[in-house]
Image 1: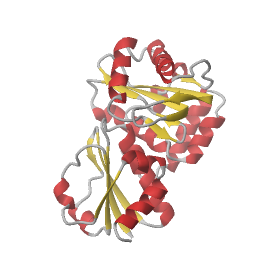
Image 2: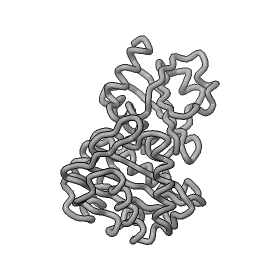
Image 3: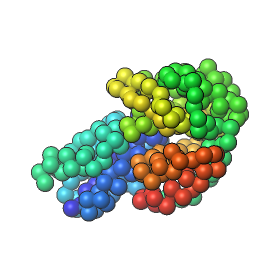
Image 4: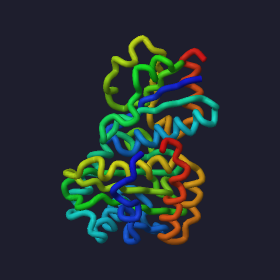
Length: 103
Length: 164
């Protein structure tokens, strides 16, 4: 399946990148397609386009602070997870997010 | 990702790596000790001011990442240039945070200068953070016998990064 995700954290340095890497690793292991946008200290990296979001089956928001440009995710299948949990166990968080998203 | 302007070996220096933390069995003395390494390496001006910055960040949310890893960090104008102190403890350090901590065996303390443009340091710190979710990299850190092993673990670990 196609997944898009956004990660962010309070200082935008450690957690947001670790959570992104962890979700990418988990998705790869599960055979899913994933694109992850990082909202960190450098602003928005690997920004998700409207097409990215619209073609995704599931949107995962792993954010500790308010997500920037939230309008992109209106009326989409959005599941929120804690960045720290995504870091600790990306596989489990991905699986839970899929279940919550109806998969 | 574009190449970083900072090299990991400039940020993680021999003076700021201690692979055998002994006698630092609580979080506070551990953090103070790692700060003293950064100070000795000329990365920060005031240990006290940087300690405050680290604890301010600790107050925002946990820096214990699970899996025996902790990444305390602080951004302050007392930081002269971006630095990382890395400590490894065989027995582990009790690393408590407001929302639950754990035993930390690999501790990275990141020092970030206040006025520095994020582009100059975030890439290199982000790479390090991303590496920490890969077991192969963690294994290499646990096996490292000296500073050079840590640096080569970081360098070879970069091939693990999926997002590049």
